[in-house]
Length: 212
Length: 212
Image (cartoon, rainbow over all chains, first blue to last red):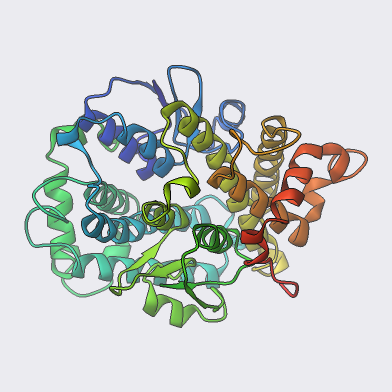
């Protein structure tokens, strides 16, 4: 399989981390969604990363749909989204907010970095900031002081939360310092959860790029 | 269950159609993602629709994650995403492009309608237009002349494609008329597939609003 996209994208990174966790071998095709837009459009009409090319040539897009496919290849003891209905609903809830946080953090950069200063819409920036702050507050309140989001094992919810936090820390740490005392004081559980996740082998095998 | 969001959103609408198809009863809470932003943020920190409140109070967001939950409640003969690996991969591919088309169509309106004219970024508009055109071309080439996208039954791929097309026809039909002869000539399979889907009871039970 071939995974296309840079690891500074939280969506590419969560797929890469899941593949390492599952022990699935893949080739990593590193191209930029902006600088290599033409090549990306040819591979995938949506012109977006991640894209995963399967052995038979099928190209899947959208990290959640890609993981729907990959989850079915996982060994039972490695599954990242348990089938038990109540646990799954709890994790789907968490996953929706964590993925939304990642999306809004990327959207914030698209609005503030990818366009000329005079084209930036202050109302839009304020709306995205409010969404990011609300997601962070919710996630902090629903992240345990130690361990995983549900039970005693890693899930897609943990991965999505950790990669979103790492992205924000690297790109726009100002989102985390709205209160007093800095990120560690305002979001202690979230920051600690992220730090622990980043020590796992699957995370270290798909590191956030230093130069991103 | 309570589904929040207006049916002019392709993402709210695909959830509503699936629930009608499954025969799942729900209350429909119609609020605007823009005009009722405060109420939405309180319900769901992401401040986005759709949101689905389950019987136990859990609120799920993200149409694909909501459907992951609902698909597990479906009668076997109504399932909208078959388990057979090859069929599922084929449909996930199609679903990714159809959902991406819907997302880009919504993003196009956010860029061109939701901000002051002097804040519109021509480069961004051109990029979104290119993505919409490429998705339409791909979907047209992969939509059969008659029937469903895979086998002899409706799937999430069919629903996503049809709701995206209905949204574009209502809101920005200019995306469909880039060639000569109008939408029916340029995208005959897609237009015909959409028209047929919109005659189904599940679609008519969650109609695109006339005044949207």
